[in-house]
Length: 256
Image (cartoon, rainbow, N blue to C red; front, side):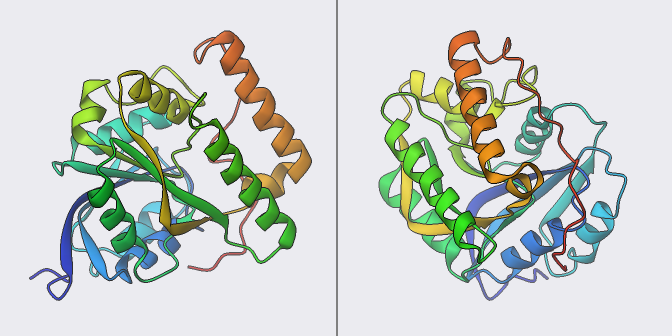
C-alpha cells in the first residue's frame, strides 16, 4: 500500500544528488512528504558520503514508499544526476539540490501545474534563502533578477531546482559528465541552443540554504560567481579554471 494513496500522484520524477548532506537531505525529504501532491518517483544518488546521509534517507522511506537511493563512487555531480534520470521513467524530471526546501504545502503542485500549462522544455522557480537575514534575501532577489535579465542573452539557471522534459534531456545527452562545475549552466545553454523553451516560474518560490554564501561571505561569493561566469563565457565550460569542491561545508545548525 502506498503512503500517498490519498494524494494525487503527479507524473514527475525528482532526482537529488548528495554528498555529505546529513544536515539537509532529511529536511528536503520531509518537505516533499508534506506536499499536497506526490511525485511518482524520487531518486537520491549519493556519492559515497562519509556522514549519516544514507541513514537520514532510510529514515524517510516508510513515509516515502517511492523513494529509492543509489550509492556511487565520488565523481562529478553530472554523473549522479544522469544516473538518477536513467533510473526513472517519468516524462517530467525535476532536479533538486539536497539543501533545498519546499516550504509551502502546495509548492510542488503549483510548480507542476505551471509547467503543464506553459509546456516548457526547461524551467526553474525563484530561489529564496532559508534564513530571515535581510542581506541574504537581498542577495537572492538580486540573483533572481540577474537570471531573469540574462535569460534572453546568455541563460544562467542553476540546478538548485531545475525542471527538464525527459525528451529534451535525452535529446541533448543529459549533463556533461566531464564538466566538474557549471554543468547545470552548460545543460541549460545546450537545450536553449537546440530551440528548447525556457521559462522562469512565477507561481512558486523554493528555499535554499545560505551555507555557500556564509562560508565565503556574500561579497566574495558574488565576486566568485561573476568570475566563474566570465571564465565560462571566455574559455568555455571545459577550459574554465574556476574550482568548486562539493560536500565541504561547515557544520549546519539545521535540525532534521
